[in-house]
Length: 187
Image (cartoon, rainbow, N blue to C red):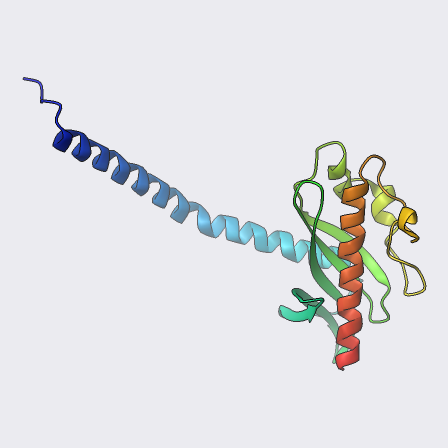
């Protein structure tokens, strides 16, 4: 004998389906939360190590304000002296948020940069993560150089056909350098 299609039966069936789906989603979230968190922490640690010079110990996460935004940074210490800073800097690129880890020496010289995440166009703006010619020109960029694109009066060549991404990248690096300068003024 078939059950009759009534509003009560349909609501009961829909409620059961929603509860089962919610339980499956909740279980998947609970099972993947810690592995995803650990993977993100590993990426962050690797990025910090990649942008800082060899040696020293890394401080716990700290925050600083610059230009109305809060930046996360880490200090590389040798004893009590700061050797370098790793600053997490984000700007808006062509496809969305472009997040970098920037290693900056106390005098404002860029040690290295690394992309943490981006939403740039594959094959164009996404080259900000793989184009060694573009990335390497930031290494050693000191306070006597302008961290802007050549088209904007600076010392950095843009990625071909990716001016917006290149501008966002240079702005993120410039902001990280300014954060370090502001930290030095406070001390």
